[in-house]
Image 1 (cartoon, helix red, strand yellow):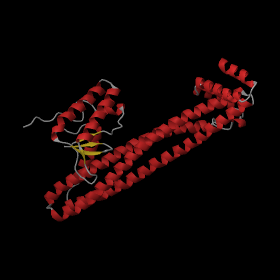
Image 2 (image 1 turned 30 degrees about the horizontal axis):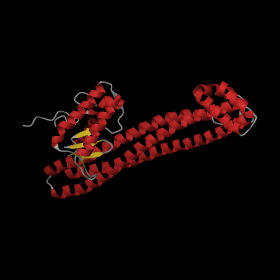
Image 3 (image 1 turned 45 degrees about the vertical axis):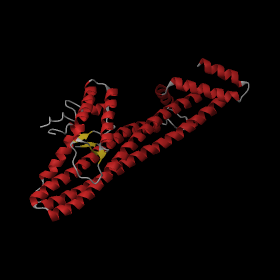
Image 4 (image 1 turned 180 degrees about the vertical axis):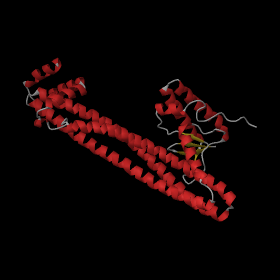
Length: 97
Length: 253
């Protein structure tokens, strides 16, 4: 699964990371919904950290499309309100068939 | 992964890519057309970056001018105080205070803009690399695949480039928004400059009373008071008899 951090790069993560990614995403949505700015920054930073450390960065010459696109790391709280709503950016993983 | 991409950023990216793919009819032609469009986009990105750099340079020049004003006004405050003109010293310090506040705000915004410019340049570099990669891949696709297969592979390759293009677009948007905000701020500073706010105080002319009234509202009184006392103490320590009187005044102010 490929995740792009906007204005930073693309990272390839293991399918098994999807659940954790979804959890982190939900935490960010909850913080935004609660109007908790500090919580949003901490949560989004954790989400980005997970992608950067668990993922392998793709080369710039790679032409693979991303499965998920995260907003830029310097996203403001106001901008976040437009992005992190409902299911967030990463939906629940589909149940294994 | 159904519905895997949410949010405004990814929606914009998806619609751009699907528009690009909708044009696909003859694979060879589509490939060349896509590549031409990619090169055009790259040109636009370069122009956009140049605009951001120009805006930043203008602000840096303004920042340098303000720095000079701060130094000049500080010197004038000292001179006025040495000459026993405390009112003039206070005016100079009020102006210095305003100039310093503007300077800090400008410098902070220039730093933020620099960060965004860096990301923009980085994203542009990646786009350039992806376009080059696309160019290589397009020749392979043209030479090796049937029309139907080529269609699929074009889709994949074009999506990769399209996504990077959208990423550059986003970086550009953010840098441009920042320069717009800064322009508003810079215009406000220019107005102060045009009103003679940071001018040489020895050239005080008619209409200055009004400026000073506005300035004393803008600048922080406690900061000006503190600085005036500090300056008095500094000057006083080298002036023997004048010391006790000046320090006494500072305490009462």
